[in-house]
Length: 178
Image 1: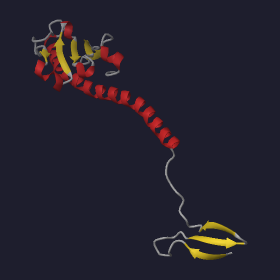
Image 2: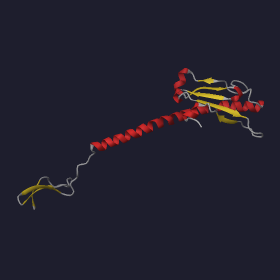
Image 3: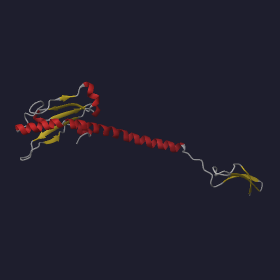
């Protein structure tokens, strides 16, 4: 077989050479081994990729939303710190928890977020009730979850109160607090 005619000119930019050959009365096309094959994705490959992306999104988006709410709820947890300090100083001064309520003996007064600022913060209200129990309620950004802390008098010789998150805190069931 000998090449009769080259269909494409030879150049440095074109590596594939297609030739027409005639051998024993039959004609055929041959391609050099350097000829690039057609490349691309089939429809089924694209559908598989889209399905995988959809499954990952269906799992990731709810997890991300929960993560965001947990992060926002940290603002509610930090909002109780002045109340904890106030109740602890009240306990140190009086020797009892009975007088450690909001607005007395160094405990801050109850606080509520103004209606216009509700979208800017995760804290709706913070209050200190009887025996120094502190209740913080989150805004709608954290599903109005509550965070209830109760102080316990420490063992003899210990100075600081022991704080525990109460079972009626809805932040525990939602996974926003420990």
